[in-house]
Length: 248
Length: 248
Image 1 (cartoon, chains in turn blue, purple):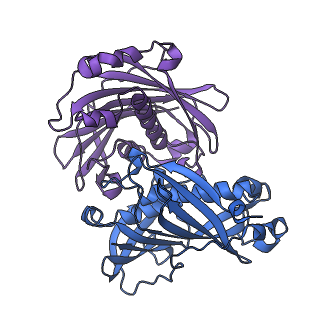
Image 2 (cartoon, rainbow over the protein chains, first blue to last red):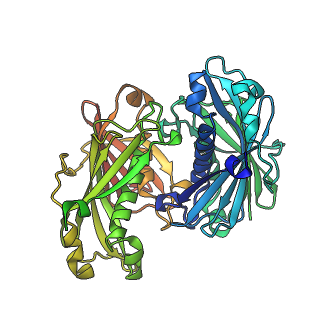
Image 3 (cartoon, chains in turn cyan, brown):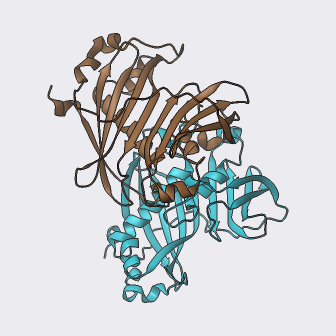
């Protein structure tokens, strides 16, 4: 198999309702496209959700990191390329490159996925699914951004509380992965987005939340225009997500 | 010009993060697709935003009505067709048909648009833009749903208050038209969506809102599983939107 066969490539355009006040594609929409590309790429190689579901397995997103030099502008054509970097027993690393209309790299992303049983929610050994065929797709294309970091808040400040609503909920009855990203972005003043641009965004999905749950959003400044974020649910200590955002 | 030339037709698939807990395409995403189709169709006929902006004009959405027999399901292919029904001096009526993967109609939508000057925000006489060429695209295909109604709340009940955040704001600095739809849907209990499906949704855009504005959402039950909605801003009487939603 050549490297080209291992890399999936998908074309998009930045739609008017998908850009923010500065005319930049929003990170929520970009995240949605990344996850869809992961899904298309896996499906075309026999590891799609539908195939897995028939075996009562499913993919679970554990981490997502996006680092952008420049976001696609309104009406701009852009391309997302995705490939599998590593496969371990319980996790796989999938990377992405986002390219502008001229083919120039705008940014990169990294994601970590686990496969679980749909009934028992227990992890599945990836090296034994489909006779380990996922290993055939491992590709050594470089992804020049740092791996996910370990996010820990020393002195978290409560910034916002949100009750999970209808629009947050996906077909599995959980708050959907993209909505957490949007809610985190909404913690920051519009001025940040007007004067700066998101440089790096990380999110680690720790536990699920459900309709009616109360989500408390905590932040901690970690440097110049850089923040750690933690989402806890129902007034207790249970962490739902941890994140990090930095602006340039 | 034949009827076929007058009707724009665009294909979509219901993506996983674009369906709700019941696996139905969300109305917000459908609304986004409808507005994009309006934009594609107008652009291809010389009435797109870019062309208008060069003349310092722009389109403004005044009303949107969607009536669905059935929503596209997760991963389902569907098609949106759009055409211009009427052109008046200050408004134009644009209709839509949403079809399932087999071509069967799933629902219809109606929209009303005005054209305004970008600087003075004053209405433009549509019959005189581009020598009235928009009239060439008027099409008599039927749209078998009721026209927008006049929405008035006799005894409005305050249901929710929302402060406008980053994710609400579009490139013009206004709360985007789709976000109002999502916020209205979020007024209703998840049970409504689990046990029923949206039959008809109407929204009339009355005034703009901006970052930091406080939006008060009022509802009034108008019949079995049918509600009028009014959004007012900043604790005063200024109405931003009026809407109506009914479930079946």
